[in-house]
Amino acid sequence: MEGERVHHARTYHGWSQGDLATMVGKSQPAISAIEKGKPASAEMIAAIAEATQFAPWFFERGRLPDLPAGSLRYRKRAAARVRDDERIRAHVRQTVEIMDDMREVAHSLPIRIRPVPRDEQVGDDDIEELALRCREILGVGPLDPIPNLTRAVERAGVAVIGSSQEILTHEGASYWPDFPTGRPIVCLSRGRPGDKHRFSLAHELGHLLLHQLRGTEDLQKGEAEAFRFAGALLLPRGAAYEVVQPPVTLQELAMVKARFGISIRALVRRCLDLEMITPTRRTSLEKQISARGWTKVEPVKVDVERPGLVRQIVARATGTDNPAKLHLALGLPPIAIRDMVA
Image 1 (cartoon, one colour):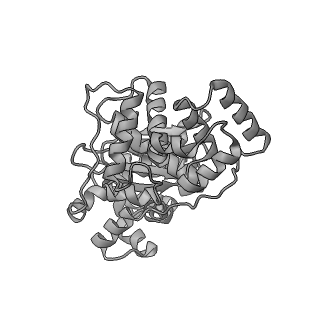
Image 2 (spheres, rainbow, N blue to C red; image 1 turned 120 degrees about the horizontal axis):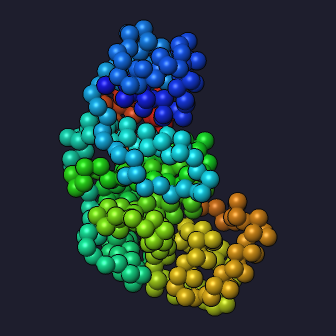
Image 3 (cartoon, rainbow, N blue to C red; image 1 turned 120 degrees about the vertical axis):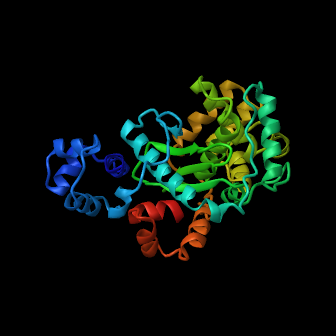
């Protein structure tokens, strides 16, 4: 499967065939021919391995895990490029392969979340209740802040990984391979503030629960459901009614952010969802946020949470968590090791 894996390695870095060809001193048609199935010489594979920092033996393995285009759910901006979608897809795909390789090691870590049944009708109140049930699974009280959402989600069996912070238009992605036996994966873009990380993780968890079986043919509706779930998970309805009092102000929301670890902009949307403010008031608050420059950097720092589940699984399987040694053991580029286990 040299061709598929060469394409994968190139895609992971966001390179065109011409980019890779230049790096290995060959022509673009030569790279194209390999990706289409033409056998590559040992010298060519060695050159591609050196350029991409994948181990030579990585290209000799069989087919990569199936991850059809369109099956990965993205939380991204409208300006996101297809090339960046494919980079994240490649990162998740190679993580699926590693997790599959280490399935026997990870079998003692049960997956405790379960998606909504395929034919179940879901409304706003259902999503609120689903978030409360999920909080119970995560070991959090119905009205309490979640101190470390990442660790709580990992204890429920979800693998949380990072992706390159160079990809500025993406916030997160999720995938549940080989459902129900595979391990669900959430990929979060690195370099984001802690409140954005938490909301993106909650959002992707919502997709895993709401859309693994029900699907998301109406993408806009699916995003709205995941957004509502994320808000309900981080700030349950009962807690919102206790800590947010009319008239809703940005100063008040900043104090709620400090306690519950949810961004001020997301809190404005949460208040709208719960009919605690009108659409007109929401517009006013959004204008105030923009005028203060908070659309880029909000006040009240929320610490960035560090995942640990994948690192634990990999360390148990390989006997090391040293990035340099893992590069040799897993055959992946150092940057991929960092994003997967750091």
